[in-house]
Length: 310
Figure (cartoon, rainbow, N blue to C red):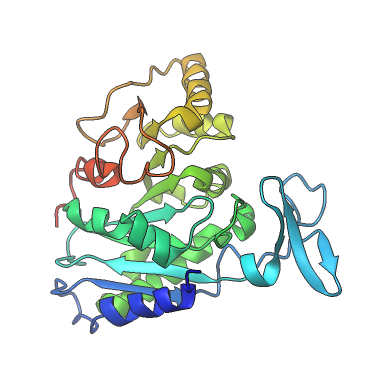
């Protein structure tokens, strides 16, 4: 059995480096997983439709949630991890134009084992050449559950990003205000669609949201994505998909046509205001973050976002 605590400890031991001096380019990469006060879980509220409490099971004081796919998951095992990954590539310069890449993982994932290790999300951000930092919160831990938890609630994601700015400031030596002002690129894989849809519906990223990248991640809420695209023509939207989310992407395309928007089927040459691209791939779902329409699709797409060179 995988020892998650050992993986996290190993990550911290091998990748955390001394804080950079104020305003300086980083000479080494920084990657750490830290607990946040504002996080998706623990979550004490109701289901989004108001039909009942999220924690709907109580077994001798032990609370749990009935997941449509996974059965009963217990709060103490699945919905209590406040961890967030903060990662800064070598050469990041807070004095230059920069972006924050926010990554929402899918089902059955943990930050160290899957986001950092298996899916190489930080490695792809670093290899893109973008002057960017990475922020990735833990949702349901290692579970077949896409729940957004506290991110369902208006304003929570904004508070989460404010806390991320404080943490990134400590890591880099730059003022948190620099990170508070940076534009955001929101990336979701698979079950990460649920919190992404909540952030878009609530408008918690405001005018900072430069664009959205979905990686085989439209399993519901097609109307939320289509409406956001129609209302935010100064932002970009790219959804690469395989067979698993083909129907959801087809629904987005149909809804966009109703708005008079013709989504491209081709990979974008540039990620810029008004880019709308829905890209089909025959790649398998489980490895989609590292192999889709190209190898390392996140790296490929971020490399086409101009104006933020590292």
